[in-house]
Length: 311
Image (spheres, rainbow, N blue to C red):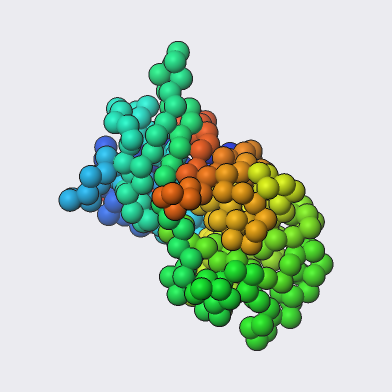
């Protein structure tokens, strides 16, 4: 099975063209994601992303499916969808602009930058759509704090949150959590310094917290100025990653809602920078960042067998 490896700010995935390998869609994709994502015995990645034919009746040019390291399927990945656009542009000759990519969030519109010499896509701006803020739609079971939204709600009020409260105190994390969905759920917590937060433990606890019935992505965030936001991310199903596009979008929305940042800011993540703009006129979040192909190869029969491959 042929694959390509891409990364967006170090948020890296194994990509497979299901349009050219249609039998793949009928196999155990969750198991395959677990095997290829292993950084010691597989390819090594934050998960598996498939480029599939769009659903009949949509106007999309290609459909994206995403699987995490633990084999669970997620609705969307902002860094991943930029790389889907690069794969589709550079290797599937999909050159329409805007490019329309179907995701679990719906069909997203992507405009892109092409290198003049190589003709390859190098960066893209993704219309991430409107943030989902109603508590029940995020979803979260936390009580709304303002107009049906959870803005700096008390996460530690749930029973059995003693360890969580202590970790937050040790890491200088504010007790309030702001909940945003960008098609997938995010919990944003503000802190004194993201580097001092024990995110390996805190992220796992909050991801599986009873306040989040579909689990959640977790972000610890510092806002040094109104146009600069610094963050670290724990991704649902994958753990700590170098960047998250949907996460960066949710972080800016949370920073605006709590009065900390302007509607356009640079998000500084461990893997690099994203430009995020929450447009007042449209209420849509626009995300701009790079997309890079790192290598390609063929998955061995032995590796596929480890995933229970029967196709």
